[in-house]
Image 1 (tube, one colour):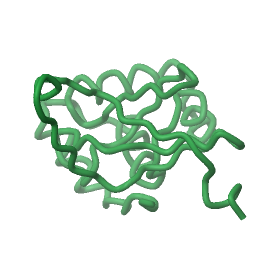
Image 2: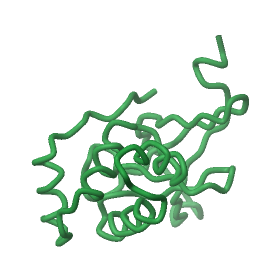
Image 3: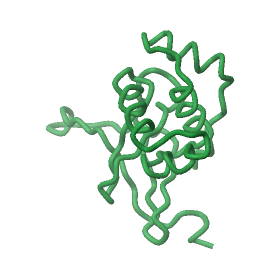
Length: 143
């Protein structure tokens, strides 16, 4: 299972924002920095709680999540609990590398799984999937 993302230096985060035509602001850097540390998708309330100590309120965090998502720097995913979660595109690129998530049926944790190739045949060859989710026990709950 995939681990946490590799933190990027603030200079790289500023370049990401500028390349997408976004103003470089402290809140945007803070949101991106936290998501780089996070790894698996994180909900808005979880992120707002982590950033509250930096003086960012829930509305500011939410507005920045939307701006970053619209610019293609974040991906929003909804798992079976109907909670929107945000993450950096896999590999840190501008396009989302579709990858599955494991949702633990015991504790509810979410983990990113390695990207997997799926070959479609016949009538299913035109299927479009935007979310891939597996349900089961995470490593901690399995032990």
